[in-house]
Image 1: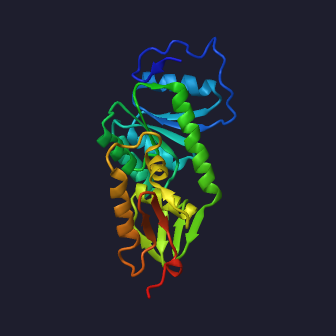
Image 2: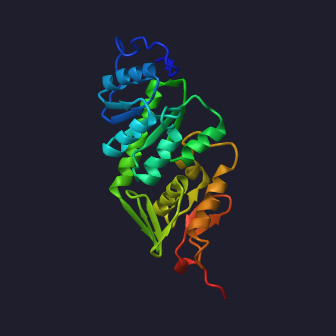
Image 3: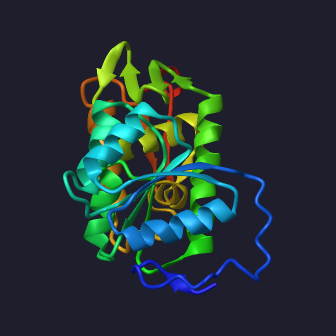
Length: 256
């Protein structure tokens, strides 16, 4: 399968080839202003049995994303009327919608990827891309989201994390968490009191392409500030050389 993603001709890459076995049929929203790319994605996804809806500007895309239910969203970064970053932030923080978002962009700088994830994107692909890889990444996002939906509310110690409303509370007090902090806390709560390795946390945020810099440390620091700073007993603990874990206050070693 050839690489594609810059809007060049898409010459019947499907016809004459045996399509992969596709048990998962997704309802995909594509928000993309390049009509050539949009048409090609329609052709590819519909041939795989997926349902596809689309918008060619950010505002229309946000309206669709907040008024219909989709399994996953493919979101271009540069859009008219509202860019992809602003759309993703509003989708998460204003409308509290948690549909998985894969962001498409021609920008491959690390800083651009980090900004995309911090806006609430779940995955990131740089153009040009392989169509089968895009399909596989979308299916992985949908499977992960379905797994989270089976347990809508997480509890640990005096923490409560609602995966549907994207709200977190400690001792009844709401915690203000950015999207990455929320995802890290969910990962830690599902594993608690076990240790979550740094590698597992990096994969949760950046997939298989973590940054070369120690960006995880800054996100953990921000999470710790929101989670523990206002309280006398911390819940988040560092396991040096391994990762991080949550511990109930009553399980901490007593001082003698």
